[in-house]
Picture 1 (spheres, rainbow, N blue to C red):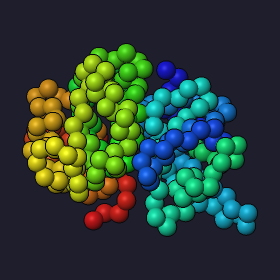
Picture 2: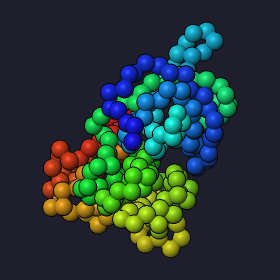
Picture 3: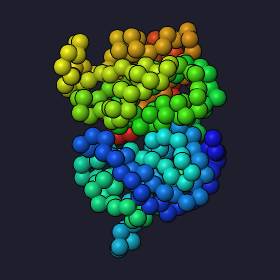
Length: 248
């Protein structure tokens, strides 16, 4: 995989070539980025918009999977009253340019050469960089065992729902578990709740197996899960976190 961590971080012009609806508020956007240097799963890019009056706004978005030549995918969740995400989801049309810079990040990444068990814990759209790891695992033919614990408000809010069902069935060594915070599907055992010790203990890996743990989501979610993992005996150096949103 062509995926240098120290790629030049100048701005490049990217154009939209495809969009896919994931949930009522999230879309996957496929970009053509000429000269893209490659990336590792878990890295992100900065996206910058420039208005006709020269005003600029930039936001960071996780890369959603391995690069395919000069094409990369971002999954964007619409933020109410946001400056960038509503444009990308509602206004940006194929062929229109934006600027991107990246890939960015060297700590919150998974390398296909790794053989240790992997625990992925996602809150909401924090599943995006973790899905990049799931996809990269399959593309590389890795046999590292993966477990994904995904916390979402409702079944309708699960990003990549169909693909996750298919991968949980077909990708040997991948297990997927869900936590619902507001409404659960029919037949779900238990009540909707915020992720807690029982969820992490039941669906995660025992600390003695020394898994690599990746946690991504809103700040409060990430802090809670990281504390739970350390409390269960996972060394802090093996708990890697990526967060977004205000502290709370």
